[in-house]
Image (spheres, rainbow, N blue to C red):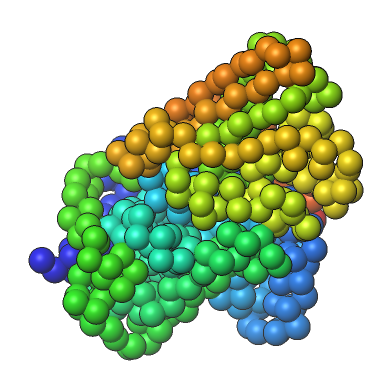
Length: 452
């Protein structure tokens, strides 16, 4: 079947009036969340390195880098803002595929929408199109994509950003198809970066995907073309990234009726998604039983085999913040000792805190067969944590699914993160404006809310 053409047709033809109210509200919420994460992330050392790089590149002053206010090309602005958004493990996540759209799609739309003077409704429509295309492509190659060492956001993000920009530029079906085909050639991101925790390369994967998507759309607009069968072809994306297990039917199943954007959730803690349910389980146990770190003899944290063998069970003694956020035993010890595992807790000082290090050595990760079976069926992020105290008392908590943030939870998280870079009044205006994004007449009017 001509899946590439069908997805391109959907992306080109979808109208704002086709969107259910829940989908519209979700898109607005994702944008708000993404901007809060970007503002906080913009202050981090690796984000500053990217900012300096973009600043030194110069370029036509088309689009704005958040916080700093620098005007640069749309491609470079999306690279910087996407890096900010993916820079501290606080971004949104599509549970079934581990793709993060807020650090890819939102920066791309803002960069081009600012140029085009797009409306808030056009922004929302482009977001929905992008999330549907990106996540469905990710579903078709999951889990082989990650197993083979590709990073889901880096690999699938260019499709989302490219189709979002194509929607803003009102591409017809053929130009949208070529955008998607060119985006396939821009897929990147290798799992060795998060799996080892060495260096901070992983931080730029969101920015890479967003800027690559914009580049794909602009090349298609200028006449560059690609194969009509780029997704389903024998040597196309799905077989190249998903091998013989690629599920091509996932590309269009329920298209326009089942909205993948509604499967997006937000991280409660600043850590890898597979560690999140472990931390939540510990949080429940601490509230229920009130034990202190000093009274802990041992903690066993169970997860699925993929997470244990390839991601969060690999790094035992992290040496930098990236590796700390992908180390389950360190992250759980951090939470217990500091009472949190967010933006404020993952610091260089806490990396060498002897209380955290000592406790982390008492924590073991393991494969939990029930969690593994659940993951094989529906890919939920679950975990089982057992705490044994020095008194001999043992407590166990199982989290089968990450808890969902309420609308006010997201508002508060966004305020808290944005406040790292801008003042409280500006934070409040950002929340109000984003929640009413459909009423915005000109996307460029958002820029003062996102810069100092």
